[in-house]
Structure formats: structure tokens, C-alpha cells
Length: 91
Length: 377
Image 1 (cartoon, each protein chain N blue to C red):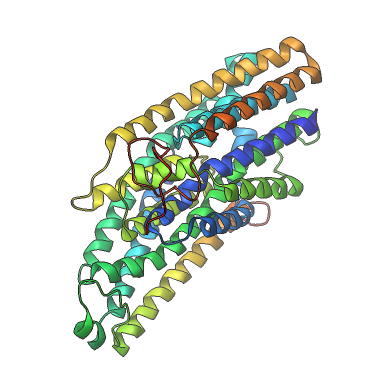
Image 2 (spheres, each protein chain N blue to C red):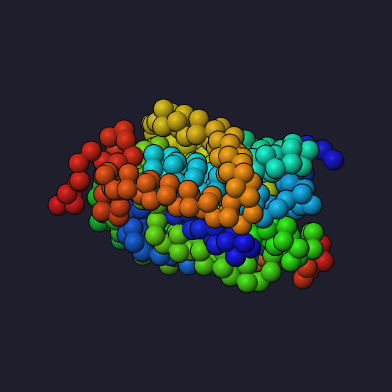
């Protein structure tokens, strides 16, 4: 028995980075593409908090980003549930 | 006697939820993404759900730390007393210390007092509690710093106001994930202890999992505690450590949620408090020009180092008292002393109250604002 489980450690670091930094980054990309378009370009002053730019393509990419984030969260929670109930699953 | 122990355990769970609301919701409250009361309500509900999500940590506490053969109900009760006392004292000073370590320290102290150091499974303690405690804030800080940097980089063409607006929405989601993760880790600890008590009582066999009524009770206790809310700790985390903007809040929460959920599923009972603090410091490091108040961080780190041994001492003392008096009466004496302390601390806290009204007042160097701040006009 070792004192430190290196396999678990690198898994936590790598998946932590993917889920903990990657998913919010994807969300940020969604916000970014949502804001593309004529509306924010024309009216955006420094204090405008308008988020939707009005470009269809931008909005579509944004929706895609948000959906991926939601799906990843759902999948992650499902995995944790599976691992956390060893009596009902086979590892 | 078993009933007494279970009630004490549920009280601990309550202080746990109460102490740790801040981990999940401090940043959302600080950036104004959620109104304080709504935030604690959502957090309470999700803690309840999270408690059912994974049972790996409960198994670690129940079977991986001390030799279940030598543990008696008195030991468990004394351990819980140690945990509760330390939780309340740190709450009074607004220090987000680890409820998990308080509990584990208390149980270990009581076990040593009862039957010597050989009854403690030191390997399990170091590999599943101490090492994760040291590593988890570092990993969380790393993830949060990376996330913060990415978020500001990607969203740099947005105006400040639009960015704040967008990320406040994201923050609600990420804060919810932290609450869920908190349930998978912290609610488990009390389940583990009650399971330990049931094993000690002979109700359950060694190596058993938590029965369903234990899971439900613990989930309820922690979510009620969360709803009541530890405003002092929320204040220290949200205002004291770094001044937080919405993208940083989201990065910190995502990092915490990811690290806690991953560790929970490996059965590591890490401290959600340490992770949340690490993340918040990480967001300070990841944004250019942000300032981390290292003296506040240092004060917390000191409290962390002392948590295990102090709670262990209180646990050992409580065992000594209960054992000296003997039997069920001894445990009752313990609980009376405990209750008296709680009342004392509660009255002490009334003199400089922190609640949902002044939780976001300007940081002046102390957990409690100097004067009751009028709401911003």
C-alpha cells in the first residue's frame, strides 16, 4: 500500500482542469459568440450590458457551447453517482 | 445512548452545513449574482440532493480511519463534541476552517484517549485525509487560476458590464454545482460517523454502508444548517480574501466543484473549505492586477494546521470527562457541557452580528463590520 495514490492524483488534476477550467472557458466562448453582431457593435458603450449581438451564426454557436456545458455536467454527475454506489454497479 | 449519539451527530451535521454555506455561495453573494437569502435556500436544497449522490466518503470515515473493533459509543460522542466545539469557535472568528478535519480530529482524539495510538489506522488517515488536505487547495488554486485566465482572455472584447452580466448567469450554475459537490463530501462525513456508532453498538456489521434512514437524516440536517447560513464565514470568503468579479467567481466555483466531485468519487474526504479557499486564491493569481490578501490567507492556513490537533484535544478531553463519570450519564454530562458552550458562543456572537444585511459591507480587516452599514442607496 502506498501513501499516495498517484493514479487518483493525476486523474483529479487532469479532469479537474478539463471540467473546472475547460467548461467555464466553453461558457465564455458561448458568451463571446453570442455577443457578435450588429447590435452590440453599434450601441455598445463601455457601460452597456447588452449580451445578444444579433448575429444568427453567433447565437447558434453560443447555444451549442451552452448545450455542451450542460451535457458535460449531466454526464459528470451521472458518473459520480455510478462510482459512488458500488453496490448497484460493477466497477 | 445510541439515540444521544445520533442526535449529536446530526447537530454536528447542522453546524457543518451552517459553516460551509460560504464555500458554495460566498462568491455568488459577493458579486451580487444571487440575493443572499435565495442563495442559501438553493444551496440547502442541492446539498440535500448531493448527499444521495455518492457514498464513497461515508465508507472512508466509517471504516478507514479507526479500528472499528475498539470504538465505543462514548468515543463517538466525545469525538463529535470535539468537532462541534471547534466548528463553533472558528465560526465565531469568521475563519473558514475545515469541518471535516474538526470531526476527524475529534474522533481520532477520543479514540487515542480510549485505547491508545494503535487503534488509529494511521495509513488511512495520512493517505485519505492529511495528504488530500495539503494537495487539494493547491490543485484547486491551479485549476481556478487557469480558468480565470481563460475566461478573461476569451471575453476580453466584451464590455465590463456585459461581461459581468453574462458571467453572473454562469455563476448561478457553477455555485449550484458546488452545493451539490458539498453534499457528496460533507454530508457523507456525518453519515460515516453515525454508521461508525451503529457498528460500535453492534447494530451493523463491521464494513457496512450507511443505511437509508441515516442518509435521509444527514441530508436534512446539513441542508437546514446550510439554509440558516454562516454569514460570518461567507463574509470572510467573499470579501476578505480577494475582491471578486463575476468571471472570477465562476472560475473559482467551477474549480471547486470539479475538484470536490472528483475527490468524493475516489473516497477522499477532503475539506470543501480548503478547496474553496484554494480556488478563490487561484482566481486572484490568475487575473492580472488582482490582489490576494495574504495575511487573511495566512490566518486561515494557521487555523487549518491547528484544526486536527485542537479538535483531537477537545475530543480526548470530552472522552476523559465522559469516561471519568462513566456510562450513559458520562455522555449526558458531556452533552450538557457542550450545550452550555454553544449557548455561550451564540451570545458572544450577538454582540457583533453578521447576517444577510451586512454580509457584503466593505472589508475593514475584521469579520464583523465595524458599524451596521446602511444599505447602499
